[in-house]
Length: 289
Image 1 (cartoon, rainbow, N blue to C red):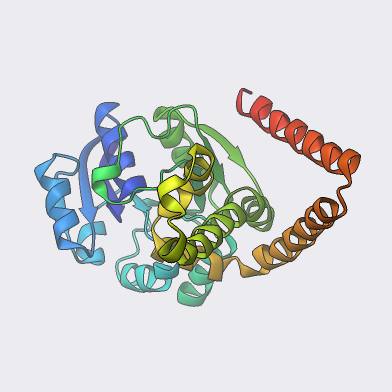
Image 2 (cartoon, rainbow, N blue to C red; image 1 turned 180 degrees about the vertical axis):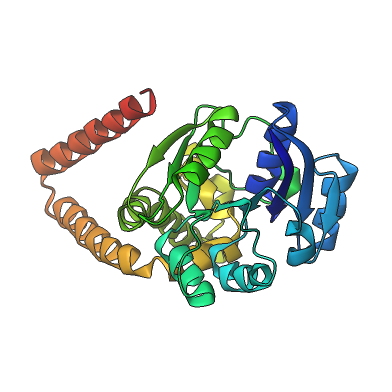
């Protein structure tokens, strides 16, 4: 049982952690920290958190577990705010979408990664943001990746693992660099593509009423372009080393498709579509495991 859980960033992820922790009776008190006063007020009014602070250090004081659920571009500021009161007897973890950048941030601020800090990333979310988008079952059946270092306390890892499992998640461990490589392909690149396509068609829509006649396929493909722009700016800059080669590779793949269409290469284009459908089915099969 966690006595005092401090969640820094009471948005979609942080708010969902709070809701799930309360519903599962995993802690006695939930403290929320958020720079957005309106969001913090809503979290208090809806009973998502028990106490709210705008100051990171005050909110994390006396907590026995701290969850950082803010955009990855904010971690230098968060770590600096925590440095003076770093809770050595507590466990600190995060929910950032990139792991190497978070670890590098900790090294910049502390000189080394504290052994009670467990980097993590829940593979769950939605295109909406803020505490109003949070749900009690967001992590049910979802995967959570922890990326501890060799110096990370095994007991701290176990505590974080138990927290996520208690909220219904399946927990895996992975090297930080491998995490960033995998997520660049499966999450970061698709978001860039959705943003880019929607931006391109948005310019055309001004003259050609494209959105008025857009079908369900457009809605489904571009749903994630409704995601928080600030969060995705931070992710793209933090993981650019992995994202950029994938963008170049996708450009080459698109050029191949364009060439086949231009040539009317029926058999080859059909084979491309068949292979792609098969790859997607393998993805769907993996989701069921």
